[in-house]
Image 1 (cartoon, rainbow, N blue to C red):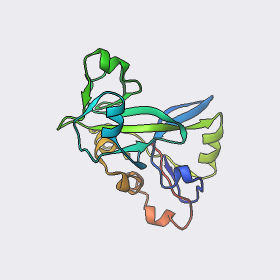
Image 2 (cartoon, one colour):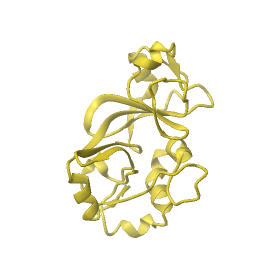
Image 3 (spheres, rainbow, N blue to C red):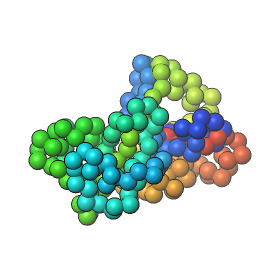
Amino acid sequence: MCAVPQLLDPNFRRAVVLMLEHSEAGAMGLVLNNASSTHVAEVAEALEMNWRGDPEQPVRTGGPVDPIRGWILHDQAGWDPAAETILPGVHLTSSLESAQEAGHRAFGEPGTQFQFLLGYAQWGAGQLEAEIASGAWVVVPLVGDDEPSPGVGPQWILHTHTHDMWHLALRSIGVDPDRLVGLHSRGAVLQ
């Protein structure tokens, strides 16, 4: 889903959210395109991990809830035995314990994709549905790389620059983001 420009909550201004859970009890997801001023290398050092990627790669702010809780989206199925597969080629690590137990004390090697996020977004029962019904969010499907359907896939999630995500997510379903700017607030979400 993509938040439209009329959504005034500053936590979701032109945000792109990857929905992880959505049920009658509520919903939760990760804001993908909110880069912070903290670098992944700094967080990795604090976690006694070795970051081998770009030393300037920013940590992303995954949402306003529990801002010290970390999440890693990556393309390495074997790196964390307990990682959840979001889509073929995209895995979610929510705890480093199993990766460390498997002997992995480093991540971000050349040729791999790792996105580190802190915090998450959460909605209570019926809250997200009400926001969708009011027109605050536009659904953008997640699709596999080999699916010709409208939506975004693994490569988009892991390789798209944070500045481009909102526009490209909307364009992937045939929505011109420039036509939304005057009508709505800013943000985007994926489900």
